[in-house]
Length: 290
Ligand code: NAD
Image 1 (cartoon, rainbow, N blue to C red):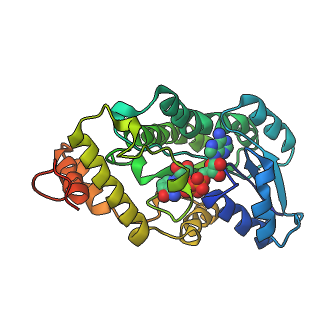
Image 2 (image 1 turned 45 degrees about the vertical axis):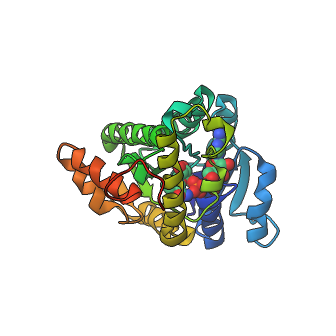
Image 3 (image 1 turned 135 degrees about the vertical axis):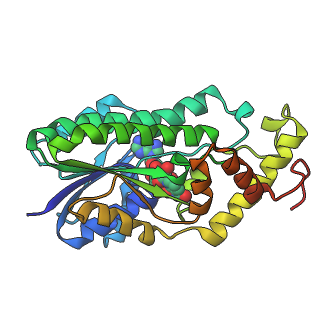
């Protein structure tokens, strides 16, 4: 009996890696979904150029209810064992310059996209009284990160959503797991919206914030260069969440920022100070030294 898995956001990164891994395993039937199925080429290439019977590529845009309904219709009767809500987008920059449209898009994909996806597949899981839901969250869903306010807000919301839902899913034997990644070596960073600190978009912004933002970008690039995990390493955590008889509600893929996170447990200001010092250095923050 093969385990049936549907994954969102499979055209790149973690979703692409997970779909490839499961489709080659033999024990799974994978519905690899993506906004534009033409991007499934990369997945097929990884699988040797042709679509094995362990894989089906489906169109699914998590912001489009019709697309979700069509995908749910397509897998109807397939007894979905695992739903992986992985599609996500980032948004970086000073809060004052985040456009309404960009903010709405982040929430539409990261939060409402996850909600719509769960809504589409949950009734069948409940009827079977079995299933697993795995959601790609982030370290940014557990702690605030500078110049990522809106992204963190969306992932904090995902955390609250899932923790609340998990309580109701207990009697249905449906396990929900949040996977919190730190920096992972995917195109996430290059895919995200991020204004140039010296570009015209930030012209109206005060020089001090622009300086901090410039320093943050350098910090972030360094963190991705030196501390990013490979997709394979992160996939291990997804596989454990799929295979464990009693998976945890939360699993972090890295302990990179865990010492800082612990400081949040008091009144939070110790965390704010420590994160500030970690990113911008101790002492005077307004300057623009490396
Ligand atoms: P990625 O950009 O390669 O993958 C995200 C995928 O989501 C892309 O394939 C993109 O096309 C897809 N997507 C975007 N909007 C969509 C929509 N409306 N409908 C369907 N798919 C859509 O980056 P990734 O690192 O593989 O990201 C996967 C998940 O991991 C995201 O939820 C992200 O927030 C989370 N995450 C990533 C990192 C990281 O450093 N890479 C860190 C923490 C959390």
